[in-house]
Image 1 (spheres, rainbow, N blue to C red):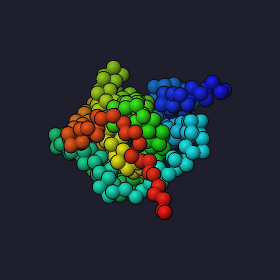
Image 2: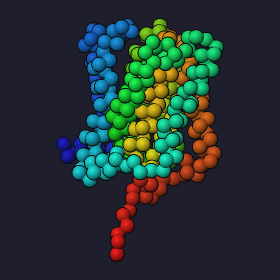
Image 3: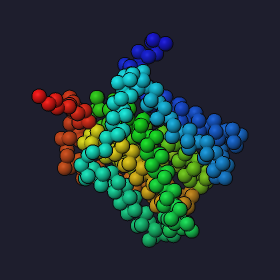
Length: 301
């Protein structure tokens, strides 16, 4: 037991990813197998598993973070995590960026594709209850953002920043964050559901999602966190992405589900490029000796 704890303390980042994937993927596979009796669910069968698969998947990053924080840092680690989760007094421009970058970059490719084909009509335009769809998107975004960022930003990002620049931290965590979504993307987002062969799905998904939009967005999330030190702002930025993906992404399965992420990935990397051009040294430079979120209190004399 002592050897295991020592290994976690010496290699917290690999352990975080291993535990997160084990918990989330294990729960998804178990739920799908329990409900459908196999691992090739139809769209209708997969929908039946959502009440079990989605909550279990979301708990993976949070549970991994809380368990490993206790092992690595004990009570001091929990106090630090709680403080970063409650950090809300940051410059307003960071709130604006965190909340608006996702809807703007999601809307552009969806609207362009919609003009070319009704298959790309956003969900909000096809659902009869548009208000309910919007409310559901906001609620889903807040829940997903909070649970996931307790792990990704609460634990993984600070540990990765001890070794990598903002850019490479975003790429590393972003690729693994994208991979973490694989089963939900494949079963619930147009893979088997749309009749797209696995080989084709994997190539399209890897380029558009795995190293595309999610990785680019994570780079920006790391950049924002570097300037705010706030897990709360990161959670809101994640919530904005999830909410507007729910509201704007087309519902047509199959090939349309695999095309629009390419446009989203392209627009997101353009934003990353713009940030990198204006903050090149900051994005690619070495880590700071003192992380920006660490505040040294001023004592009164």
